Image (cartoon, rainbow, N blue to C red; front, side, top):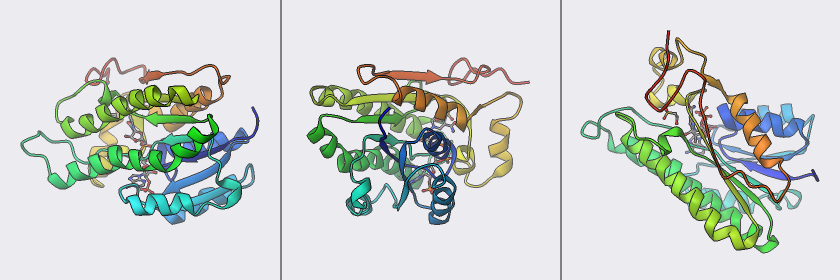
Length: 251
Ligand code: NDP
Ligand code: 8X3
């Protein structure tokens, strides 16, 4: 593979961080994005031993921050070959009648609008070059609605729809578009969902072997390293103990 540059949102933790580490080992140049600047700097330091790395600190909810950050890229990072739309999270797990409006805003603004802003900032150059790859990180929550998942599921159904919409609209521009939809992955995801309640978060992954961030990173790398005429459209990935959004074989 000729040397490529990837922009990864949500690179400070979990799936995004593991993807950055694997991409670096495979000589892909990196634009690491997230809000936590200390983590960005640490990861940059670690991965600069393997590849060229730059960082962008922005909140995907802010269109100004998104566009200003991407426009500020140094010349040698301005050509983005691979966009990994990964930043996202669940906020809360409640019935629709008990859900918090702030949580709803967060999920729609980050998981849906944030993904759109970043895509809007990056896609024109891919269209101009007739070349590029967008990988959208959806979820099993974007394929099946589960109890109390309501708005998080809606945000990931939107990602699923946007993934299909991007593929259709970018088809004549030779741009590959893929989605990966994981089941339960043991990351900081549940810490965020349960607002720092570590006990509740840890319980999610007890009694079975959850997917690890590295498992999803392996799959993302596999997808982006296929020959250019191969576009893996859509992948659902479960831990072996999981059979659907709600069926889990726990001890
Ligand atoms: P983590 O919580 O470990 O990582 C989330 C990442 O998103 C962090 O790097 C965080 O960076 C970034 N992020 C969150 N909010 C913002 C924001 N407003 N602006 C910029 N960046 C933001 O979770 P995962 O690695 O598990 O999640 C990655 C993706 O995978 C998400 O889209 C999630 O929905 C999806 N997913 C996760 C599953 C799981 O079970 N873990 C299963 C299916 C899908 P920072 O806080 O520094 O900004
Ligand atoms: C994360 C997986 O099942 O908690 O998207 O929604 S789940």
